[in-house]
Image: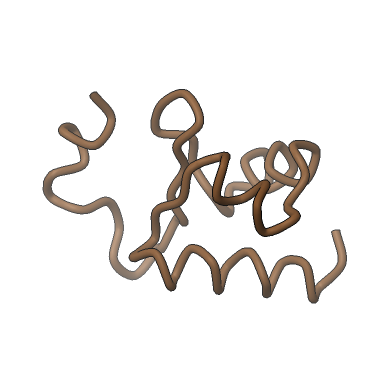
Length: 70
């Protein structure tokens, strides 16, 4: 994945408080292949069908992550 694509995706997630759904990513021209690659590399995590969040080693998961995953 190109560096500018990675930067675009991380900015999208940061602008959305670390969360995005697949429709928002596709609207921003992020392909399903790129989403899969980001998940495999541990950059984003799939929390439920079509919902992802940016993995942040400094902050970790939010306290209410179980409600988000449900």
